[in-house]
Image 1 (cartoon, helix red, strand yellow):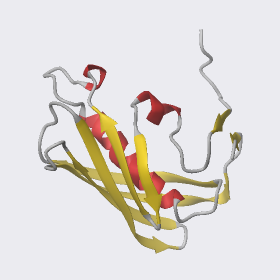
Image 2 (tube, rainbow, N blue to C red; image 1 turned 60 degrees about the vertical axis):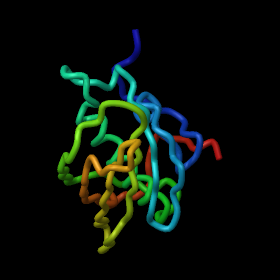
Image 3 (cartoon, rainbow, N blue to C red; image 1 turned 120 degrees about the horizontal axis):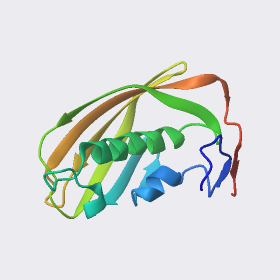
Image 4 (cartoon, rainbow, N blue to C red; image 1 turned 180 degrees about the vertical axis):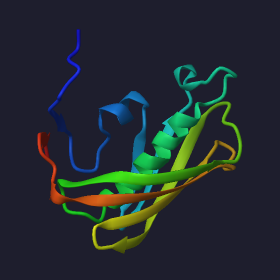
Length: 148
């Protein structure tokens, strides 16, 4: 039986997928200068009861895309977290891959604001996402090792 925590683990590098993101098969296509693009396939395991991609999976992709955009402008190992988010679902996802394009549009002290748009295989926007992150006072992440 797996431990329920607390956990300590190694990340491949600063800008890389964490265990949850790997579980959802997310792939970082780019993360640079406060912008990021990630993709995720639609597997049946990500479906809700009507056979559409679960909204939580789409939110996870959008949130992770903003995280990678943030990591592209912060020092390696900086501890920050989502403190607020909102999303607007525009179209259901029935198949294929979804792509999230994120960017940081404001940084004020320890507060960062980001947004992401998620698109389906037909390049139709399926989700609009906004979030606010805060850098911790003790800004270094503890209990995580980066292999880099």
